[in-house]
Length: 336
Image: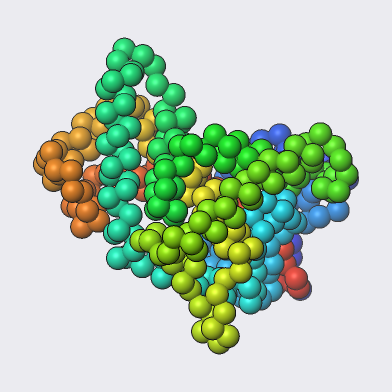
């Protein structure tokens, strides 16, 4: 039997649980520096293994995925996101991924570039009108920008009218899911605590808006967006479309995943450029040379912007929006 990987000893009984609750990133980084890219942790009665080795990660996710399931930390997200691609597993995940796959083909992504370009240009024009000489909260602006783009690309509608309600509901729901995952003793949703009641109320509002959008689209007919593609998708074996519940789950998954994480990445990219003005200058000069004053920016322009791509990729390396996730081993396994 392979030995349990070396790692920090932690406290008697509790192990490293307090370090993980207080500052998990610092704990993981220091343990990786000291013990390597496969580290063992004891946390109360549970054994955790931190993998930062690409081959080890590939083993878990690609080579032996049937031995691993999504951990208890996904249970709170499942309440919010349902059976969307982030939380579903097994046959449900494979079916949903196959149905959603056409939405991510290159030509589909290319059709969303105009929405991204238009929304960004509108934001910059608003900054010129309203923000001269004032400090701008970049993260709030990136959240507003990505939310509008998501509305255009996914639903072909401006979400500004519903943005406050949807954004507030998502914020409450995702915060609840995070607290639920981190709690030593999670309180079931059936217990009417203040947070549970608040979360259920906000998600009820969110669901009402999403189901209304689905019903309106069925009545209006197809458009060139993700919702129409999901409505048109059919299972290869049964010919059945997605149910409204699964449509809701995929939409809330993609709204949340395509909104906050993207805004975080953009915010960090702008932060890094502010710390490295020589790179900000190079990005600007490259954009001026390739795009000039053109408004019809297309996906083919992206490969002509290698400096911008390097900035984005380095930002994602340093500050990935999703920097850790868990799997639970069903049986003993050998890694490395």
